[in-house]
Amino acid sequence: MSTALLAVQTLNGLQLGLLLFLVAAGLTLVFGVMDLINLAHGVQYMLGAYFAVVGYRLTGNFLFAILIALALAMALGLVLEFLVYRHLYGRSHLDQVLATFGVILFLDEAVKAIFGAAPLALPGPEWLSGSIPLMPGLLYPVYRIALIVAGLAVAGLLYVLVNHTRIGMLIRAGASNPAMVSALGVDIRRLFMVVFAFGGMLAGFAGAMAAPILAVEPTMGDNLLILAFVVIVIGGIGSVRGAFIAALLIGLIDTLGRSFATDLLKLVFAPAAANQIGPALSSMLIYLLMALTLFIRPAGLFPAHRQ
Amino acid sequence: MNAPPRSAAGSLWLPLVLLALFAAVPLLGLAGSPGYVLSLASRVMIFALAALALDLILGYGAIVSFGHAAFIGIGAYAAGIADAHGFGDAAIALPAALAASALFALATGAVSLRTRGVYLIMITLAFGQMAYFVATSLKDYGGDDGLTLNTRSTVLGSGLLESDLAFHYVTLAILAAFYLFCRVIVMSRFGRVLAGIRENPERMRAIGYDPYPYQLTAYVIAGMIAGVAGFLLANQAEFVSPSYMSWQRSGELIMMVVLGGAGSLHGAIIGAAVYLLSQEYLAQVTEHWKLIFGPLLILAVLFANGGLTGLLASLRPGKPDPSKSKTQTISDS
Image (cartoon, rainbow over all chains, first blue to last red; front, side, top):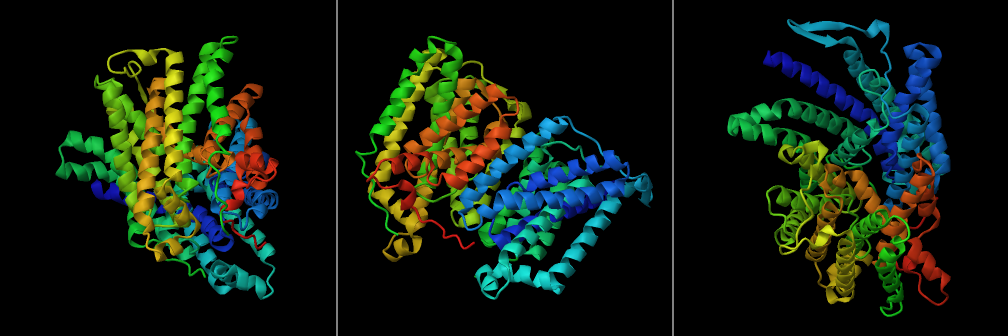
């Protein structure tokens, strides 16, 4: 039974990792290209889930709901860029942290005022319901498998987009030397808007896809945001590849740590002590990993070569 | 750019007025509901103390700590845990709070201060989260739900702090003492080295000052002061909870410092007062006060560069604007 549990938890970890990657990819691009800390990225993820709920209520169709969520998440990104973020480029990181903190307060409260604080539910599509046996005695929900597949597909798409297209080339150039890109005649403002809207759309997509398996509530973005920051710091700010690897690492370590840390500790400590330390240690594990990474490599695993 | 020397005497009236205002609060409270006014004022002073500590490292040392609320929590838990074991006297609980926050600051500071910029913000955030999760897993001390204190700490056996009025003045005295302490630090040789590191670490290194020990010392001092604030907060609320060290709290502390104007010490006190009082006021106007408060914060950041003390200073002709003394990034957009 233990192998079955290990397999399930590994899949769960993979799924959390891919979800984290979708959020972290936008965050690291915005960070890398615009040198902007966007604390409100977690709220954009949360709103993606709410947009999907709205879309579902309007159309009654899951696919349409996701498409509506994507469109609205992108629109939200553009509006935020126009109203707030545009004025923060080139400001100190401290100012950015504070202004985006204000954005969080506003959007969180707006969601509470419109939808209420109680969690909402988004039903998954009929054709992805049920479970399939992965191995004898191990059933795994189809929707979660679909989530993993969708996450991997978006990661692949992003890889092609960033590494093999013209806009991707500009984004990579912008991440390493924005002033030079601007000097070479690229409209850097438009590039910034595109990156911001696209990052917001990725976060919104993650939120919408996560909505059927999580409770849709105003606080759902908070913890994920912090995890996404851990991911981009470990991966190296501005590096999509680093974000991908770090996201999977964090997803797996966090999920497996939570299920097995206490049992592993019981091998060394008395059961009572292990029961005490286990939960604390497992929730600290990823932060320990981050502190250790920064201690050894102060700019993350795959630092983008910023001039 | 060169920072104009801050005149110590010229900026003394403002902190004195602030402390006098706090001292006068109980008189004001006689008319309405004294309990509410006193507890609000005490809370403002406690957060002012924590913001003061943060300003010492953020404003003078350019160390942007996004995990400073952890120290409040550690101080508060020291008080709460000491109380739970029957050591409810300040003579034991307060040194415990100081020692715990100093140790945490030393350990986390030693690692964090090796990084710079954004990475420093993020690693302090990570350590803050670690402290938060440890607190939520303290099942013997309430875990997620927090811990209610049996009584407020006694002071060498006397129940002095039980009276809200006495607590108010004790808090005020502590705030005033630490304000003075920070002012002395800032004007000392140590403080000048710290400010030099803020302005230009390479140059300081070139003239023979290694930034690391100076920054670490400042970080530990700031952690300990915030630990005292936590001790006071636990006593004021007679309750300790992990939410004291959530990352939102750390963000609020930074907001208080920047709102008041970083690098002026009394700015942190003004910032804490304005932040908490406007929150309190808006919460009475509407249930959804954050809808107003959020945009206000954004506007404050976008347009009030240098914070409230910066605004005050720019109103007085001939006085140097404190916001201008810090290196400002040049906008290229």
